[in-house]
Amino acid sequence: MRVTFPHMGNIWIIVKTVLEDLGLEVLVPPRPNPKSLEAGVRHSPEFACFPLKLNIGDFVGALDQGAEAIVMAGGIGPCRLGHYAQVEAQVLKDLGYSAEMVVLEPPRGRFPQLWDKIRYLTGHRPVGRVIGALRFGWEKLKALDELDKVLALGRPAEAVRGSAAAAHRRAVASVCQAASIAGTRKAARAGAEDIALTAGASSGSVTLGPPRSRPLRVGVVGEVFMIQEPFANQEVERRLGEMGVETRRALYLSDWVRMHLLPPPVGLGARRRVRRIREAARPYLRHFVGGEGLDSVGEAVLHESELYDGVIHIAPFTCMPEIVAASLLPEVSRDLGIPVLSLFLDEHTGEAGLVTRLEAFVDLLERRRAVREGRADRQGIRLRGDAPAGGHGGHPVASRPSSPTPREAHGCPLVGFSGWRRGPR
Image (tube, rainbow, N blue to C red; front, side):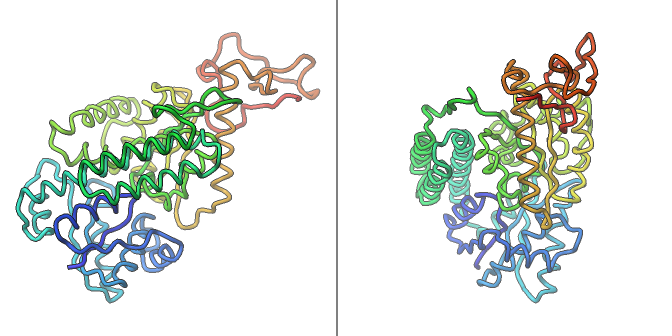
């Protein structure tokens, strides 16, 4: 039986590793591309989530190459992910494809049911062999996430654009080819060092020369597929890194596995983070709304306390849990003084418009930092209410209140640019 699955970042390496280690024939679908997206959009319901359309494109490409079974994750709660498998199976059936759909549902304490699905998928291989394959896949997953984190640190410091990404691709290829847990760890260490050296970093710590003492830090929150899959988010992390911004995802795949799949002793640290996220979100959202909606709000709050310069919120168009989060994030921004940019993306999102919004957001963050560090006068940047001697361009400017507002206490207007004025150079 030739097995395939949908893409989501580098998860294909983990799935391929585990299934091939168990003796299954794996067919990796082509990476998401404009052609596969076109097929997914053409055959999917118009108002379906963007990830579902990308999944359909992946499946059509793999089934055309001879795949016989599809493995994918299920979901719970209001998020439509829980219905993906059924909708996708019907779409593929209508297109004339016959493939078995094996859905791995989140266990929610019912691990025997998930285990039975895994045993069925692996042809009831011996338990020890299955556990060994899962451990091997887990090591590769952790290694790939660490390489992604090092890349996010390295991009803002690279002297030659694309050099850190090239080192990252070499490291990922080495981890993919590793044939053992020890080999995976060795490849990950060597890859991380290669990325750091290529980017001019040492000991995993990136420093950036003039004109900034350190890069801007932006947290990336939102729906898990959209923040993991570069094609879906139009490579937001790469674009920000090339603008000199250090990024960190609120949720890496290894974090998700720790939170939802591993037994409590192993995933204890991740579960503590979940409790912190829920506690941080409580003033704004007190209950689960599906997907990562609650996490997006809580992570945005935590990012302010962790000294991030801003937050970018990424979601698929029409995603209900993230629409709930997006409606609350402006309030988080106003209360805590951290700029937030929400991006709802689908097949109609234009590259030029997205890049313009990112550039404007980064410009806001740079000016905000300049104000907070007292460099505003040198750069000719002023907040509304501040005016050079003689006024600003001959127009009256409102005076600053005697006591600062919460926003001014943080040194910036929060979302948007109406509060900024650039003085004469």
